Amino acid sequence: MIPTRLPLATLGLSLLAAPALAGSFTPPEGCTAFMTVQSKGCRVSNHYTCEADPAGDQWRADYDQEGVYFMSRIDSEAQWVESIEIDPPSRQTLDANPADPASFSDLLATGNDSYIFGLSKDTGDRTRVRGADRLTGKQVVIDGITLQETEFNFTETDTSGNVLRRSRGNEYIHPEWRLFFSGPSQWDGGDGTYLPIDGSPVQFIFPGEPGFASTQPLFDCDAVMSSLPFPPKS
Image 1 (tube, one colour):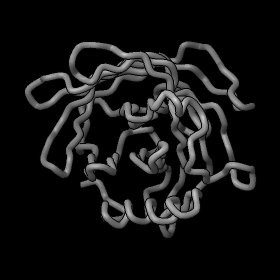
Image 2 (cartoon, helix red, strand yellow):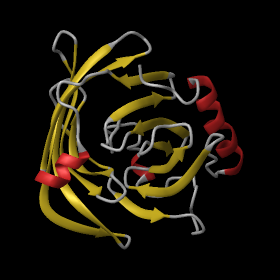
Image 3 (tube, rainbow, N blue to C red):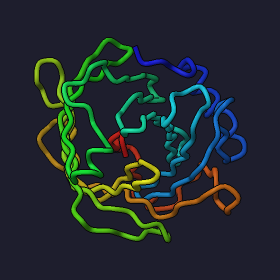
Image 4 (cartoon, rainbow, N blue to C red):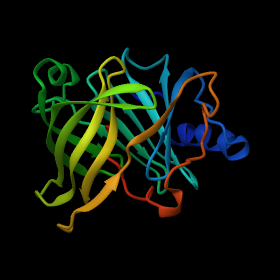
């Protein structure tokens, strides 16, 4: 069983209450925010860590124009440990003993990483994810931060093998932060049609800088793209 830091209801309320009044992210008790990322696609993400979590775990809370809509926790290998949808509320966790665990370390060491793992929702639904990441050898500089480009693909299926969602394209990683960030890609919600999306970061904001802990997205909000579900790891 994957340990939970807070019950879903408590976690959701703690993030919804303060931002709705002040427009500023307040992490749950025992947690510390360390970075805010303004991205394309009308999304702002607040990254934070919590004392009660295993070492290396990181949380992300995503906001669109309506407020927080998605939260996720990854471990030091960037595995999708826990994902929380706000409306309607649901929680998805990583199944124990993945067939091929995702490994950020392998990606850095060899330039490639494949993965096969299962996910379970509190509704009882179970899915299987298969995919791979590859370093392209290219670097990009965004808002003064140097990132490495990856090429990725993944497919999530139900227990009968039906495709629920799949995506392919490019992402970016920061080796020291052990984080993935979205990039230009294509998304298929299960109907066989790929749609282009781009959730690339635009601004990295740190404690003490203007805009840190903001819950108001700044970029592409006239396009109303944040309803598209970005891959949890990024």
